[in-house]
Length: 161
View 1 (cartoon, helix red, strand yellow):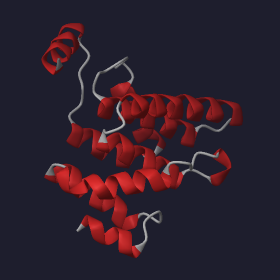
View 2: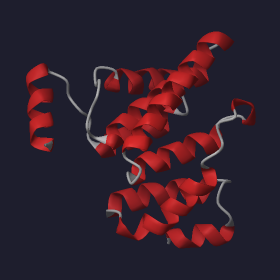
View 3: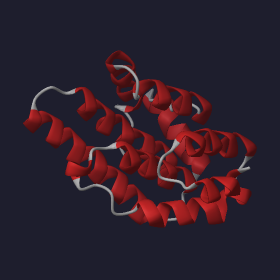
View 4: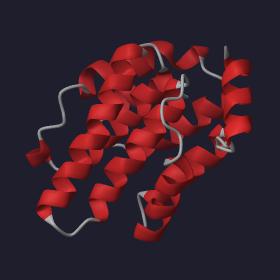
């Protein structure tokens, strides 16, 4: 199935960035409007990938655009569109570790007024439980996030060593 998707993407000219690049760009996009626009643009042509991680990053790119939007209506519209895509992705792929990590990161960092905080405890428990099964690069990415996150207690952070 993945081979078929890669062939389709190759034939249609849509390139999928590799995960290492997506992770780096995601972190940068949270720090600058220009990087957020570039990050979103790199994922904008991907419509319905069967890869939940890619779709989670696409959703995050939309949420990050909302961060830099000045108008409340446009900000809300982008935020809702991004979080709806992320929730749909996770609903279809509840065991995708990186999608859950992205949701936790977003919920950990958005203002409380958004009301988008309901899955923090569930996602933390999922990440702790499944951390040891992840590839080394994803473990390193998770560990960097957890170290600086206020969502995890010191005791919980020990699970990521």
